[in-house]
Length: 217
Image (cartoon, rainbow, N blue to C red; front, side):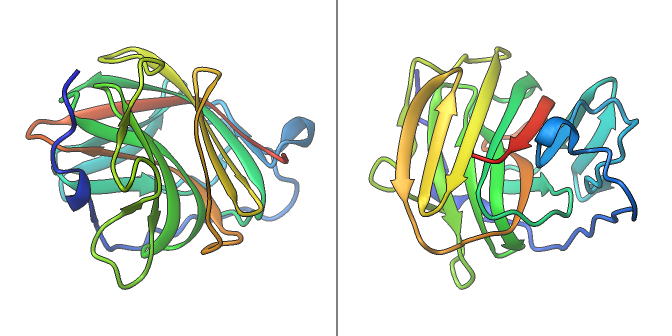
C-alpha cells in the first residue's frame, strides 16, 4: 500500500448548495431513524444535486453518485437537516478513477467553512477531519494530523461500510464493523449531515453511496 499524496492540500470549494424540504410528513425518517434513504428516488430526502465545475452529484438506480475530475477539491452534498448527536451509516464504493482519493461522511455541517468529515481512501487509509472557518485546509484529528493505514478498508473498487458517530464531543469512525478511530473535539455541537468525495490524482473519480441511514445514538 502506498501513502496518499497531497493529504494536507485538500481544498474546500466554497459554494453553498441549498436543499429544499417539503412540508408535511417526512418520508425519510421511517422506523425512528433521523434520516434513511435507499436512493430509489421515491423519497425526495432533499439532497443537493448538481453538475458544475467538473463535479456532479446525482441519484439514480439506487445510489447517490459523486463524480469529480478536480484533484484536491472536496465535493459534497447535504440533505438540509439539523441534528446534534447522530450515528451515520452508509455503504460506499469507488466505481472508477484513481485509488489515491478520499470519500466518506460529513456531520455537524454548519456551512461551507465549518464541519466534521470522516474519510477513507481506495488505497486503504482513513482520517477524521475538521474544517474550520479561517483555515485553508482540513485539519486531521487522527494520526498526528495525517491519514492512517488500515487493512480493514477494502481497496480498489471494494465496497466499504462507513459509520460515523458524532455523539457529544466524541467522534468515532467505524469501517466494515471495526472501530478505527475515536477522537474528542468540542468545535461543533450540531449541524447537517452529508456525503463527500475527492480525487487526489488526475482522473475522474466516481463514488457511489447506498443504504444511507442516520440514527439517534
